[in-house]
Image (tube, rainbow, N blue to C red; front, top):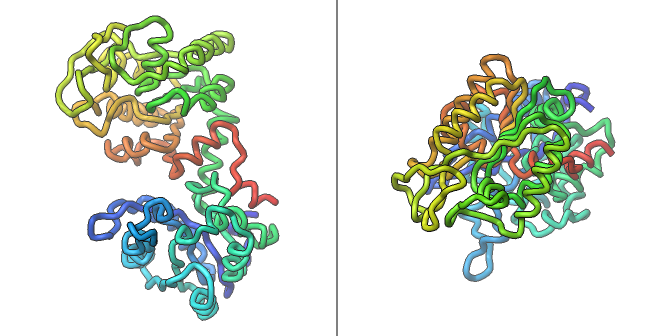
Length: 402
């Protein structure tokens, strides 16, 4: 069911959004990207005469309890975002001190067309993560329709993302514009891409990306590997990586990936050179060949030869997937490689390539580089996008199709 097919005029629409936004020390919104991404869905519903009840989580309050075991409501309450959300929606946003119960129900029933109610953090309740049916039924009672626009949590079988959908028949539930675009973007790259297709895969560990790499071997023409995981591949082939990050239990696995790539006619390129330092800290490093790093040094970024080689392959590609940074880009002295690749991806996009930044730290890197509007699609869901690209069925998506 598409959003436009829902007859929501004069109806209450329960919308699961992902407003897990970063906050400043004064608990004001420091990055409103996730709110801005949800605006098209919310504005459409308001224009159609619907009243909106918003559900979201914020942080992980159950894992960061106060010393006495209570929830830190000051830090994790969604009340902190009401002012910022009201400003971005250009309308007052009401707030319920609970996610369900008398207060939430009465306020939802009293809403007039176009009005918006934000519920308290769904993760204040243990029933949320358990996917509790009774909890979900009480959430469902707040709306006549259900819209899921929270791709970032679609891989969680939580009450507000998955179980609640069971209480709405197909003609009364729909994906929002954001979630729909996330699925469409990933499917475009995996199922019907323009070729050649290149994947840039970074991050710390091979073990975190093994399923992604195996899936990519079936879909892409070229894979560029950087970040901490590259050192495991280099060591597996006999290279000297010093004290660089390495998963010794993944050496054979790395070799098997290289073997499968060759069998599938997929080219895999590893860094030629790295910027290295004795310790994990932010000060200038020294350049070494990637397979000749001294015993007392560790690699923290890709070097200029690697940037040049990677850039050439990216610029010659028609479809680009990027998941994971290529160095410790949080450090100013080691963000050169990641930011250089971000620029090249933007340049390739300007030439007509389709580019998908697939979640996680690579999204943060592109945002910090100022190039977010120069790529085709930036995913709002780190873990969700990774699992979707791996070929997993996301429970939040499955529930909407049942």
